[in-house]
Image (cartoon, rainbow over all chains, first blue to last red; front, side):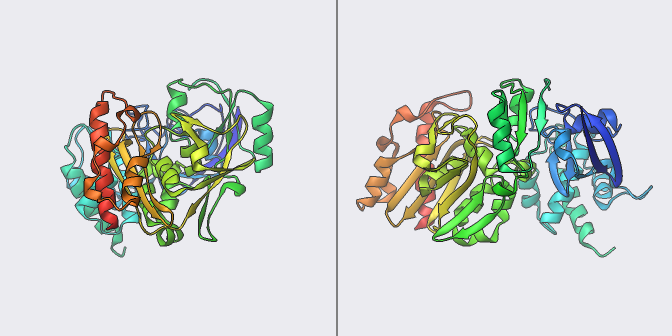
Length: 157
Length: 264
């Protein structure tokens, strides 16, 4: 076991983890943040996407010990009380989900995309979402939601 | 995940000592290939030695005649680097097309070339551009470094610290993507260097290689449009469920012509 300190959604956690524990398992099983999903176990589906030090990564593809000292943001950390993050609101408005399994990863990646490409067009969003798989929607409404959410993120608050 | 130990050394010296003292230890860089491999138990090292934050492996530097990229530099950093864009734009394009954005945020150039996946993108750039690989022990030409499928000249306990590329504006990489894995079904890196044309192909199956017949054809004044798979040894290619050897062989010639046409 190794002691690590990490900040998750603004709150500092000091935890003991086995070296082999994946970050997604620490988040889900120890910290009870079950928004990040384990979809594929082969690093392809993106359902486990969270931000580590401000960048979208697949939390099933790093060890929790590698996140020692890092700032983690998960889907649970986006809303301000009852007020949804603009990207969450855009997914709701544009029906960017059906079963919802991929949605937390989609939204975390979408925010990352919006930061790197302010006001992206649909083609950019499709290219940037290639690491996030959805088996329900056919992607059209997800792309609409990301375009709209990114636009709203760019507006002055 | 199976039970393993993890170490995060503070310096290159400490990392090398950890790798030397434990025969079952494995260097870990971005982990975007290694972690899935470990989860599938295709490899089961007893200890991972994390190289990602070593200061000796960090940074992108302009050097005489080119650019040096620290081994722990991520694909996203290479793709976004103003230095790389200025002196070797084709390499920035290549890095920006590896995997997906989350993979590019963690995967590194050192990890990619040390693994030498026969369908990886970076090895073709190193081979075509005549890059040199600096390790914890020596400096190797790309030609000496890549020794076959998943195989390099690295000895046990030796790690890549940096890669040095020449500046080159006349270079291009085209990847014919496997849409599921985002690896190259076939990829071609072409460059026009002062010494002549260089063409490297990845994804063939046996590991990255130079298409010397096409290089000689171009250096002898032959037309780009005249390059066909008839000049390319089918023996470089293998088939799998994603495509036959003949298909890859044909696609290789097509994308080499496409890449060359972007230089014209």
